[in-house]
Amino acid sequence: MGHAYTGLANTPDAIFTNPAGMAQLNTGAVSFLYLCPFGIKELAYYSFAGLMPTPWGNLSTGISSFGNQLYQEQSVLLNFSHKISGNIFLGLNIHYMKLQIKQYGSDFSFGFDLGFLIHLSPLLNWGFYSNIINRCLLYTS
Image (cartoon, rainbow, N blue to C red; front, side, top):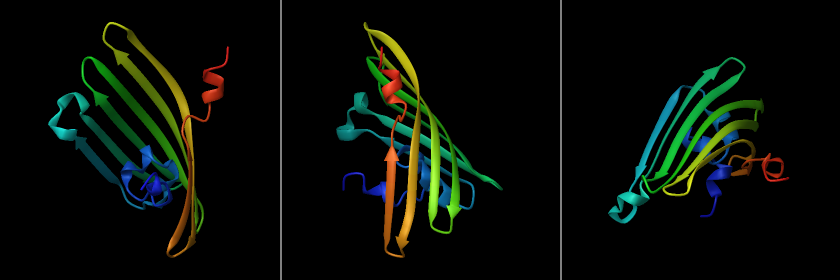
């Protein structure tokens, strides 16, 4: 389905796919996920996401990890999301990413993710999500 969830994004794990989706939630919530495709522990992926509503918007956090001691990707996200109007939502993540490869070392980076979500009708949503919007600044010399 591609990234169709970007237009729905109505659970705590939306922090990973469209940070604006977190603004749709009115109560505290948590999400846990563990995947081990084909039973291969080297491909293991886990994530945790949690949300806390406040009077001025929702605050959320997410943690994810992929891989093992040979190759590992880790992410930590902090999110603020807000309902702009009855059917327009906005979200912003601060995204810490770490990559570690045995015998090659490790590195990390910070980025910002931006998401919008609009309910066009009761049966149709439109979502937009840009991952690491400061990417151009990170890779210029």
